[in-house]
Picture 1 (cartoon, rainbow, N blue to C red):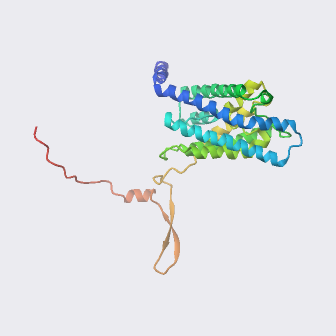
Picture 2: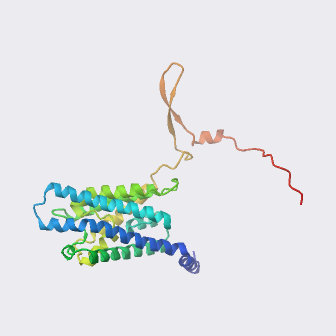
Picture 3: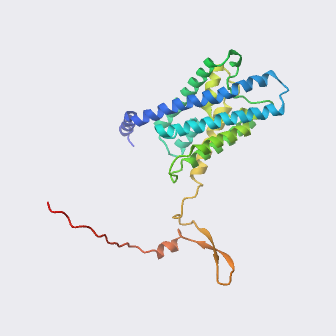
Length: 297
């Protein structure tokens, strides 16, 4: 594509109302995601620092609280976005994975990531204004916990985001009739239960950016960008090139149970999409339709 043609395409993208509506939805939904999720966990982080000998019960209560807060909020925001414009991403890792698998274009990806980061900043700012001053030291900031190594933290964020993006792609598969927000919320909840005690279970660079800016806390912040982005890219590519392509794939076969006259049960292989079945299929279709006489003019 020539430079002039590419510029024309960019201008046409900016002129579309749906493009700006989707950017607005990304900003608004990410704002509420950070506000509700970080707001539900900021008091837990403050109490954790106040007591070094935190009990096991409090630890599990904190992880369950964070999982419910982020998982339910994500599911609600995704459901609300379906009625406005379409399923939002809420996550730069998801947007970049969609770009790498050619499900979105470069211009849309750039503006969606900017909207997500600005929404996270706005959500963390609103949270800072509506919470007591004693909670402002953390305010949902993600940090590497205890004796967890930096490489281990990277691996946890990588794996958790891989599962999240894989679930997002499965929920928005073209073969599905409608986007399903529940699996995405459950994936976030499961990832939070898994990684909360090690990294705070971000799985979302924008979610970590807002509280880090408001609280000016940048320790190991690279983990929450590199890990989720790389994990999301691999999750999207893995789903894109490994899910079942359908019965019309030449190499696809399906198993079915059969029972002969003697009562023996066996397994037959149904090659409905194989080359032989295609050659046996008729090449022409003929049909007739009874139509009424044309009315006189």
